[in-house]
Length: 237
Image (cartoon, rainbow, N blue to C red):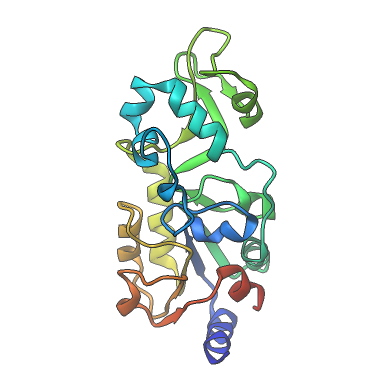
């Protein structure tokens, strides 16, 4: 409880909070993460999920890609949890500068957050690789096999696959927010995926908080570490 009180005080004093989150932020909404014991990367498929979710696999075997994608990557009915709702409230109160997320589920926006930098894209945006026409996620879910545009092009989710670069505009916005932050809260991420994890180097403030169930490579650099579910921690604030 002492750590919660420290965090509560820091949040109360902060005016430019930035939150950096990963898959663990959404597990309390029923969305599995990737690397935990029950995560996607520990489940059995014909190909490893890391391979399926790569740009080269998408080009080579789009049918298998979309079979996995529909099965595991489209939690359209998921609802925000206490972490998402707390962050949205902080933004409305004028104390949260931005959310930087590695998630693609759109739950921060669903909770009401406006300034969200989605490093790895979003399942809610899809476009034709030939003509650029936009489609909603329901179109991807309804289609059989490879989703195809009216022009005959393949409709691809706007998510960043392995082997693809992050969006430069999104990166620039995230870096700008981190440089301004007076409190950085990192939650629900193993901090092992780069270049996303490398963004923490742009934070030069004095208060770095890590909320994660497992250890991370950044624990020693943190000023406060909590090993509790992030929804439980932020919900208590």
